Image (tube, rainbow, N blue to C red; front, side, top):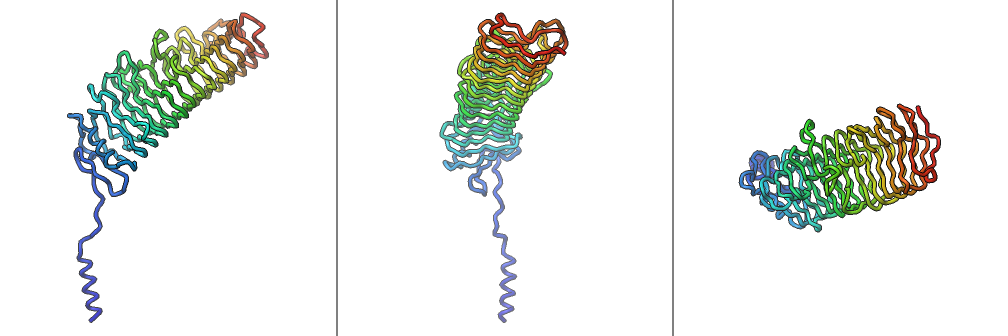
Length: 427
């Protein structure tokens, strides 16, 4: 009897419906629903382009932030186009916005009147990952502005498709200490004049690694204000980035006239530029660093660059170096590859200077410089010398350099007292 009752009970339990709920799906339209995992919300359904007509997608994101609350968490952005009509402000720490690049945030027309995203100083640890952001306005505003500590922007695409007039607007604007910008694409349209890819102001310990900065159409170089603009930055590593088909303003520009760095305004210190590739780029200079010094330019390739003020330009500071780089002097009339003024303690060593048309290293008012073990190859001669000093230089050593392609001297100096020319040779 007992066995019969047990069998009946087991059969009854098997007939009951499954009590395990399925994972909640994202709600179509502008709704937001909290996921099964605490601390994650979804926006979009991956099919519709929410807010692309009426510009209300900012409400979707603001609702997602409200759903997460002050404890932080992940906003998972499903594929679709999200047009912002107003700025979304992130104020809580630990927020991460994640997509797979099929999710696009648009700033179009005249809205929003400010940045599409603002991350304020309270939102430490903010992360933006895998999102495409499209700048289609002409109102001179930054697209994303981050003011929080330890922020990261990774694997995003910034599409810069509109120009500004009279102002400089950044696709990504940072006033953030210990920020990481890695694996992103900054793509500039043909009408992107006045725009900057990455602008960092007042930041410390910045890392910019493995990004690409290029024209959206490589056959049509984009005239931009700058790929990376630094102002009052202390401690930055710019490493393994690619710069292609870009042109920054001419030497007559009143503001920035360089592809990376800054010609004026603000001071820089402890900046390392290593392992980058610059191809088919031009500007008054390609890399310009000025301020307190301790600049290191190492292992870069500067190819087919036009820079009448110098490919690498230093101004002020102490303890800087240019080592292990490869330079191609491809300007129409030739340009100096290293132009340094007002420095103390400069090392130029183990570089290769190809197709030289003019002196490649220009030193003005430099106190303490070593130009050692470089190779200079003359494109068409005769070129009188590889290194040129002015009368204000002091304690300059030029030694162990190889000069190829003609009978030319290592150095020209108006005063033999300031320079020691030792064991340079023609081959």
